Length: 448
Ligand code: PMP
Image (cartoon, protein in one colour):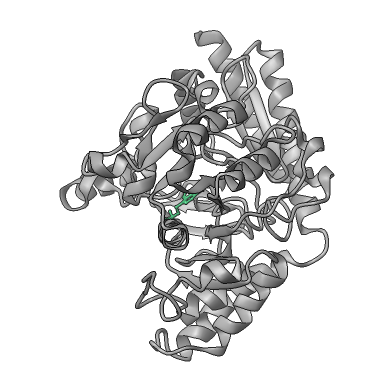
């Protein structure tokens, strides 16, 4: 295995100054047995180097944004150019108009957009706008979907198929949790029950149209159509959280994806039919690696937002030239022909190789692959909702994670997180990764 002495040293020091030693809990190794996370110092293309000069092939892609690989020259150049022209103006700029037009061209349901600084902010504001528009206060969300860390969406399901929420975090008041109803994903009957009871108070149904937060999970055939029509029957808006999905599988968002083959081999991919929401939240890829979020949607709904309407939302850093420039450069690179086909075919090869190795070593493994992203679940059942994703072996995942890390393969330290392909990965990287997987599974099958 690799020696990570310097990471241990930095982690010890970090613990003194930064709560938990990390600036986002997902970076801690708590879920994989604890200890020092790896401190990276440089990224280029598909690779990371840590503070001990170990090299890693990266499949974390910073939880999604780094779809072009690390330090992509077009993005770097765009950021440098922006920095030279002044980082922050507090005035409108032409760049924002250009980028808003690009997003609208790619995602036509965005009649109007607004740029913010994170996915959390984007989602949080769509809820405010939906409440302002409908004059209602409740929202319905789905168990296991993550929508950032604002109060309203840090609410989990209580017991039973459709319940008022319970706070998922200390500091979220029960009064706020009561405004949230959580139902299981991929279960139209549960949504119907919730709407029958709370429909007239519901401002919006909030969903990841293709789930990225408890594995990569496709909606079942007809599910999104059903969700949208049920919500609308009750006068509730539909909000898509496309923070992960936008520009991930094709140029556009889940609501525009049409060419079925590029949605990969996840179950029910063939039945995919794009359905438009009323409001959309964006983030991650659209900033090319810099902080960004955006939200938008139907004209009459977006007119609720200040300065046109009574729903307030603002931001000192919102639409800053560096984030916008990085976003434009990133989308321009993604627009090049063949990009998504390459991500799809590399992920297909990798996922198939991993499954073959698992079968060979009699390790139970379910892979959900959608285009250039896939999740690996140590279990022998399909993953279509959060309950099924929870019911997988976290200890086996932790062992796998560490065996991979020791062979220079960087994955997210969570059994729920996907592997993200970038355009920087090469066939040689895949060979190296599959060898590491084979070695890991050989060890795992012996020790269990
Ligand atoms: N929505 C989804 C679907 C996400 O996956 C995330 C982050 N993983 C967020 C919202 C929050 O975005 P951010 O971390 O930029 O606040």
